[in-house]
Every structure is written in structure tokens, then in C-alpha cells.
Image (cartoon, rainbow, N blue to C red):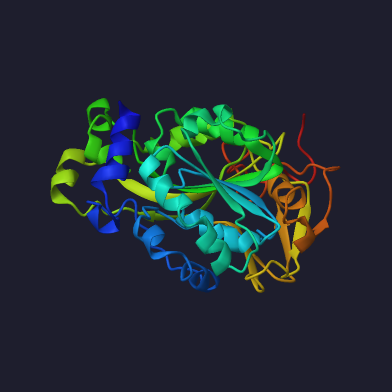
Length: 349
């Protein structure tokens, strides 16, 4: 029933962004300057059918193969197709035929708009909870993106497992979605308007972190977030005190990431060579790395840079030969937190 309700809401009820009843599925963040001329070339009909909640254009995309889960009418697919270039490819998956009809109708238009000999895009009809049923090769994607769609999925754990299976080693899932400050009551989850507006299907943020780790994505990293204002008094009354935020996460497909930030005395130096990021590289909301500066990092962060597409843009200092405990400032629940320093000499056993 839930799939049919969402298909109806996005395929028939909504005719454009103005039909949304809240701002949950709308982007509020300032558009990066390098994306504005790209989006200016996206067809007007595609732009009018966009319902995303965040920006999903990570850096260093040249030549990448990208999968967009819940691509809708294809706005992000086409924007990303310009960024990956003719040697890259972008594949969109969506369960709503009406949305895909719009997307597929403009493949040749966008290839010409971006100066390519042939479209570097393709689209598939299907459920993102059943990625294994689609003609998608395991381990074939560098990046998987999704824009305010995971909350609409009926089996969110299956989406994450399927995405992990499709990523290459060192690939990443980079996506925006809506999260709640508590688990949503069942009666609200059955409300078709609240569900279609990306609210009552939202995961409790801590459940999301658990599901991500269970799917094989160790150490989820938040890139940015914003509080959501429902802005509709009637819907807010039904939701009561539940609070929501829109957040962008990146999940790396790296085996053996540790559950805590462990210190091995490592550091990185950003070369300033990632396109459109000459001065700083932003990995997540607490790793903003200035060009040329020695930047101490934990073991997980070191691997997220050294074993991914970002490796050519960094110098790496150290290895994993010596462990110094929890990385400073990331103490977690260590029993050593708050203890006075051990005496330099004296004392007994």
C-alpha cells in the first residue's frame, strides 16, 4: 500500500514544487557557485518536478560512475552527468513511471546541452528496496546518491544493504534525507500526506546510524544539516512535538572501519587540487582541511582519504604501526575520561 500511495502522490497529486505542503522536500542551502551554470542548462520541465531536500553533488566526480536512488524526473542525474563528463555515467532508479517518463524524454537534450556526443545517462523503473532485482552489476559504482528518498522507502535497511553491494571498494553513498528526533508512531506513518511530504517515514536518527553500520558502512559521517520547519499548522498539529532535520551523510564502503576514532599519530596535507575546492576540502561537518596545512586525523579519516578517489589530492603522514588510544576530542565512553594524569614517579602497584 505504501508504494502505491507514494507513486500516486509524486506521479499524480504533485505537479510541481509549489504543490508541496511543507519545506521538508525542498533545498534551503545556498547553491555552490560551480553548480549554478550546470543547473541553468537542465530542462525546465525536469526542474519543475524536483522535490529534493539537500544538495547531493560531492566533489571529485570526473569519470565517476554514479547511481541515483529515487531519481524522480532526473534533475540530479542530469546535473551529475555534466560533472562526471563524457567518460563517466549516471544511472537513475525510480518507482514512479510518470516521473521517469519526464526524465527519459530529455536524455538527448541534455547530452547536447552539455556538449556530449551521446547521453551518459540511463534510467530504470523499480524499487530502491529491491536493487538486486535490477540490471545493476555489484561493485560497479563509485558513488551512490539519493535526495530525500530514503524516508519514503518501506524497508530502509534493504536500501542500505543494496547500496553497499553495488559500491566499489572505497566508494561512497552520499545522500540527503529527513530524520526525526524520535521514532514515529505507527498511526502517523500511515498518514499518506505526512508520508508523501517526507515526514512520517523519517528514521529516528539513532536508528539510521545503527542500520548504516549493520549494512557495512562503518563510521557514518554527517556533512551538513538544517532544522526543518513544517510550516503547515494543520500538519504540525498532527505531528505534535516531533522535530525533524534534513541532513547530508556520506557512508564509505571500506572494510574494517573502527567503531571509534582511534589515534595512530597520522596526519594529512591537502594539496588544493580537487576541482572547485582550491582552499579547503570538507570531508564532513568536523573535518574542514585547509590547503597545505598538516592536519592530524584518526585512523578512519586517514582511510577515508587514502583508500578512496580523494587519495591523489592528499599527502599522507604516518601509518598504523603505533596506537595512541582514542583520538583527542573523540573520547566516547572511555573510562580514562576525566582522570588526573598518572604521577611521573613513585606510587605503588
